[in-house]
Amino acid sequence: MHISDILVQPVILCGGSGTRLWPLSRTGFPKQFLCLTGEHSLFQQTMQRLSKLHDDKCQLIAPTIMSNETHRFLVTEQLREIDVASYDLWLEPVGRNTAPALTLAAFSAIESGLDPVFVVAPADHVIAHADAFSQVISQAVVEAAAGAVVVLGITPDRPETGYGYIQVSQATESCREARTVTSFVEKPGVDQAQRYLETGKYWWNAGLFVLKASVWLEALRQFRPDIADATYSAWQSRTHETAFIRPGKDEFAAVPDESIDYAVMERCPDSQFPVIAMPLDAGWEDLGSWESVWRHSSKNPSGNAHQGDVCSYESRNTLVQATSRLVSLVGVQDLIVIETPDAVLVANKACHQSIKQLVSDLTQQNRTEPVLHRRVYRPWGWYDTLDAGNGFKVKRIQVKPKASLSLQMHHHRAEHWVVVSGIAEVTRDDQVFQLSTSQSTYIPCGTTHRLTNSGTDPLVIIEVQTGEYLSEEDIVRFDDAYGRAVC
Image (cartoon, rainbow, N blue to C red):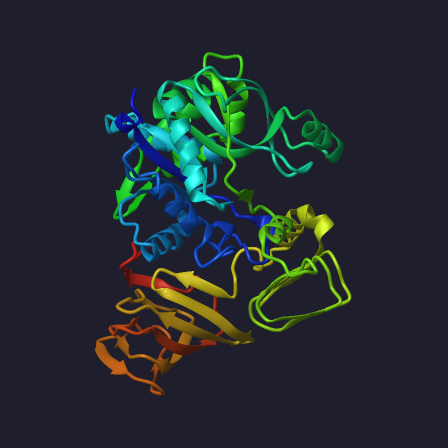
């Protein structure tokens, strides 16, 4: 089979919360949507990298993106920013790990009458050399089209305890660079990781898989028929809404929570599904922790990687991300300092894996900091809570050109709007009028209202809310352009 005859479909796994990159990564704005390396987010970089597979060597079809309901507008906005218009976007109502996500994509591909080779990629990896990545994928596609399950492996250069490993043996007959996989290994302790490094027979599992849709379904039905059957029920109950595809909510909630590795990959060696590993030497890094971000970042001669307004004296091997104010260091080393408007993290690099537990503890305390930033993004723009106290809240709101908030009403609060820049079109009950810079209006409690930016520049207003109950839950929508629930 010639590679030009093979249909290739990227499947981007865009779930996850990235708790080890808190406080920059949060449940409502996780790491895959952050710009940690360069001007584009990790998700956008993944999309751009996979789009380069489109050449005379294969037929690339529109990607499938697996995300969740909470992040639907983040996904669509970031795709718009990089001019990606053709894709299928699945929204999971609850997280069920990567095996059910890939299964939804496979059922959809098979129903369409195709059996593409899936290039399954997490949305939160960094790959420095896109051309080298494409070359390896091209080789992997040929193997997968012949029925193999291909995993990309990274030759380890340190005893890493944060990655899973794959044990490899002799080269395959079809591709001398590829190796037969004899086992998948869990994240090891330090001593075990050192032994893996010394043997030369273990590679890091990059979590990048290449296989046909039909092969995935056949393997899943053999090893985990419960996942296959439950996901099929959710797939059958799917609904379509504009750009979004949603599996049946109750049916998907009943699907077992399992990863691709646990459900299928670890069971494939010594089975009828051959697994081969292909080495990926393309500057791969899983930015799963602040220590890995420091390792990947450009550093000064003292080993410091600083971003934002940072002043440092006699400090070594530090990572600082300052987003809203000056951060100063004097005489410290091996520290991680992450500053955001509402939370600051200071950690020893050696303890970076414990940040996940810290976030878990904060979540159990019902803190808001693990969930949302002070600036909250919406499909129409964003709002930033500047101040809040007993009976009042102050927000800065920015509305994108030609965008509009929903037609809505509040039972328990009134709002005062002051235009900072741009032209605001205001609907207030049966009135529609415009406000320009420095003009203001008052929205009494119980008034139906809407804010629209009909201009070509961003609209910025200051909103002062007053009332006894100021929660975001106090909103009744009558009309909404973004598919959110209306009364």
